Length: 198
Ligand SMILES: Cc1cc2nc3c(=O)[nH]c(=O)nc-3n(C[C@H](O)[C@H](O)[C@H](O)COP(=O)(O)O)c2cc1C
Image 1 (cartoon, protein in one colour):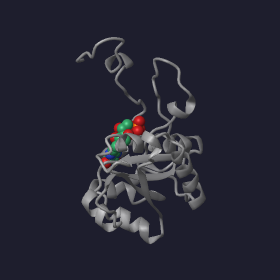
Image 2: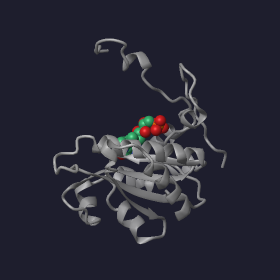
Image 3: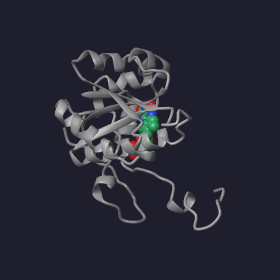
Image 4: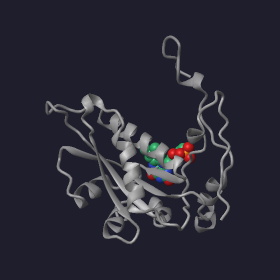
């Protein structure tokens, strides 16, 4: 299968590993090994976090194992439909309390940095990552026996680029084949002065 690539129209040049990343819903059939998964988690491990508290917790399953099926069962049906073909699934969670026992305001922020590292390492390795907010958080919390000081954030589908878009429903196939990636311009969200409502 010819690997799909996207056009990322940057206004300022950025490194290729950022530019070429995108979130496919169809993945190549070639499996992703547990050591490849561990390497991605290692990249996440070295993210910075508030007071180095490392609030992230990850459940991972590899297609064929029981954990994979348990994660899949926690996804909303929309995501189950396509993510069922992904070689690896994850659930991400974060610690809700800090070292003082108070609310850990930056925990989700820190989990985001973890995922940022993971995604960039993955893309460097030719591995694609599709993050999902569409997970039944309560169900995943119970299913994986998280304690009450943890919250579920997302699910993640991981596999190699080069999946066959024909395995997707018509509307998802259309999105998959969309050539152009889009973002707001930098000036719409970054201000050398007061906040501007744009
Ligand atoms: C926190 C988060 C939640 C997301 N939730 C879903 C989801 O439930 N289902 C889905 O198909 N895509 C989901 N996405 C993927 C986004 O739609 C996608 O990243 C966005 O459109 C930008 O596309 P790109 O990653 O290819 O640049 C999510 C992404 C993030 C970061």
